[in-house]
Amino acid sequence: MLRVGVDILELYRLKRVLDSWGESFLNRIYTQGEQEYCRSRVPQLAARFAAKEAVMKALGTGIRGVGWREIEVTRKRGQAPEILLHGRALKKADDIGVVQVALSLSHSNDYAIASVVMNLDENS
Image (tube, rainbow, N blue to C red; front, side, top):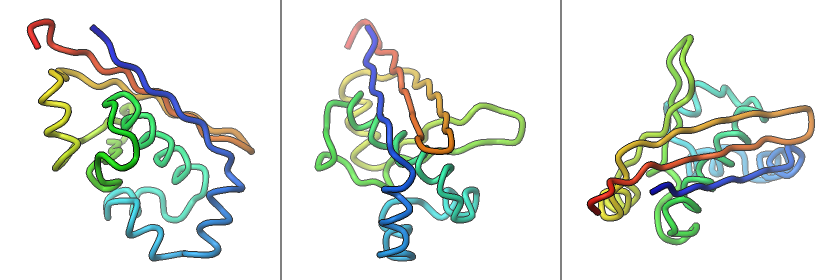
């Protein structure tokens, strides 16, 4: 069985939040590794924000079920981005039998989008 989550975000909305809340927003939403990778570039931050929301949708938790920093987007040079789950997000994934998570990110001048597909263990 598969579980899917998709999210799209207008870049100007994230820019507006960053302009208002700055470092406190970054520290609340993004891990240190995500912040270092993105270096405050709005398109990359927005794509990761969308990925976190897409994961929450696929897990079925909504934004109150897991912490933002419990969902981490990583990327090794020359490879596709990946999702790492921690804490309650990892527990929820284990509870529903997630065995693999696939992530796709994209952004344009105006939007960032993320799609997540979770493969579930058929025995769960």
